[in-house]
Image (cartoon, rainbow, N blue to C red):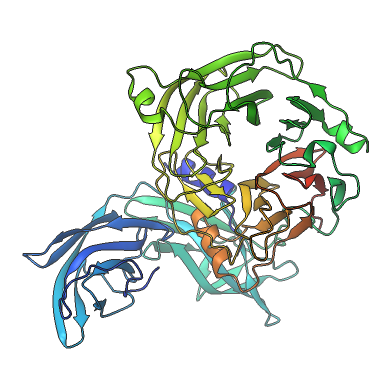
Length: 558
């Protein structure tokens, strides 16, 4: 059943390797030992996507966890680091009594630990996850749960009653209090409802016999403006490795062109649709220093940001960020870091390579963050942004994994602290602004490994993952062709659960894909952008040596 992240956020605001046997590296101890070195719950939290590590007391043979109360404690799954060749005795455990034995087995030897759970008071309302419906004619389907108006749409137009075949809530242990419903039968009149209650938090849903609503874009009716190698009208700025950055917000497209010189420019949507796009070149007064004067750029709330590239931050090659309030405005330098000072930032980032990528997350007042990832993907620098032009507080963030070559950190639409982190060499990971991973990684078997600039977006109450695959050198076997992808993330209460649903889906095919072609290169950079144009979903994909495409999808109809 479809659940929308945007809906979930509104509802919550209104309310106030998952096996017992670990696939993680094991400790090299003599055969026969049965020691737990660490133990983690991998399905904690409301949607089972949080990871919590327990406190191991080897002498007392106990492990203690503090988990959110809404965790499904009846089916706890662990990841562990154990003695060589050891394994846990079960794949999942029931902690309904908040305490249970967990046995470590190694050939004929065993050790039993007492694992205890402390429930941390819930801060979230219970949520309706799924409602099964049987119509009088015998057909069955899932109803649609709207988090916006707290309504369960039964899709039963023309009928006066239906039978509820299944009602699943999160947490599963939430009490269900029905009104005007007997023996699971919901009647059109009087109107029925169900209230979920969990540890003092409540959420009530009413039933509607109306048709299940249709949301999202129609991917069978794409309109394409193609300036890629495969489109036969490749933009000249993208024929080599020189141009490695672009962005798009539904109004304008930024191209940080270095083809034939440093000539960053902005295209309007109308210019792109004209068939012969021509843009406004940005003012370059004051731009100086760097391995490359300009390297990566972003559009944010109508403003333009571009950084230089410094392959090793130092006095003679500082890292700089430039700002334009619009495409016709003068250039201003808003941040410089040369690594020569006594601050912690100078010491941390001196001699490091920054500027191959840039991610910007600011609100309409110009407040938020910028993220930069070193080219080897081992270090993230986060900057605070205030009032569009005050850039401060360089902060080291340890990434959840190394994302080398053209990484990105893009905030999930409709959330405040969820970011999609990836690069041409890394899988897609959900994390917070401090680099803590949220939920599971999307592997290359689901979304191609070369996908860059991945974003989770919401259009017409439907959630999507968009990304553009880049292309590397001919020495890479079966190298990816630059391609724009759109995947559905409609299933799931939140982003982490939506990732899980995509990973587990029988059919993992994208809703839309468009190859851009292009030759092999040594700079596997690619970018993605999106916006809403005349009510349509508008998506841009660009890749070095390939060019770019703009695609529009109309809203789905009944």
